[in-house]
Image (cartoon, rainbow, N blue to C red; front, side, top):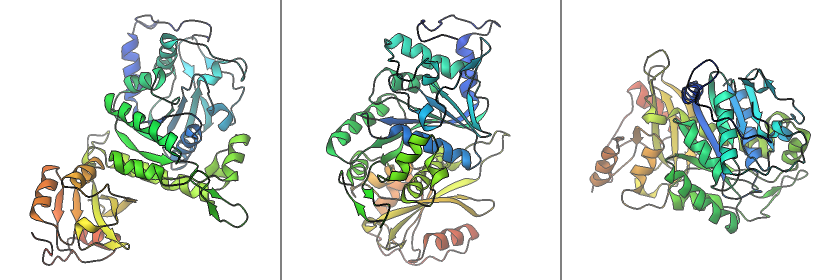
Length: 410
């Protein structure tokens, strides 16, 4: 394999005669979903989010790869307790480090003889090494490949977005202050330019939680990420507080979720991961095809809420419950709460369609709104009673949902 002082190989074929482009496509085809963790600027905790996301997905039984392509600041070896890991290769295949049975790691930091060595590479060399990691690393079949990209919208994130192929999505990390938010706008625009779906925005360092009394103080203020998500019509995945346990986990090379899953930081990470999994599960309108060729009978149901129960006036809801369900087993697979963008004609149908919603249960809804949902391939059921999301969805799946008059039929 190429060393840091060499130009990456650009030969047209592997020693066995297989074209390199086919090798890359074959590797990426073995990965069911790629998650690119991006940020508009440095210092927002992107690598910490990527490491905990990968570890949490693996803890849920998924096979996961964590790829660190931050050429100028690889943090994953430190975060994962893999500093000094000797990279292994047979000259053709690169073997990733194994954290456990479900989690494999590869970092550009493994190429550096010393952790404090500066990397001075131009764009073509960066592209070549990233391509080599995607093409030659023996990831094997994965449920998820989590990619820790460098900050900004330069060569590295562009290279990854172009090389990984579909299906893929971006998780964008920011801090609450205005300077970081401005950079995230550019990051979202970048995703649109390269046709990379944005799974959502994570607001990191969102308030300090005192380890003694549990009181919260908004050091960098709070809410900037959620406000931006509404403005950009992107999902908001959640807030992660400043917490000493998160710092300790990074310094010690152990994952936050394994150290303090009950703390505020661990709970925040777990909630964000559940939202990402729900969005991935609802991809392609909840009708993905399984590897054995059988149809996946998942469906995504949205319910407008007010004070935790169905809102009788659709346009006045505080948030939406998004539930992924299995139509055959009638089981609720996952659920999350999403804050809608500002209510304007046509915005909510497109926003819910982007979340993979197939059905919306409502108390009342005007005919024009129903037409817009139909245009976005979302079935509307009106006249439902003000009950909890779980009760309404179970009744809908059982065919026992009682509906009355459409109280907003105008």
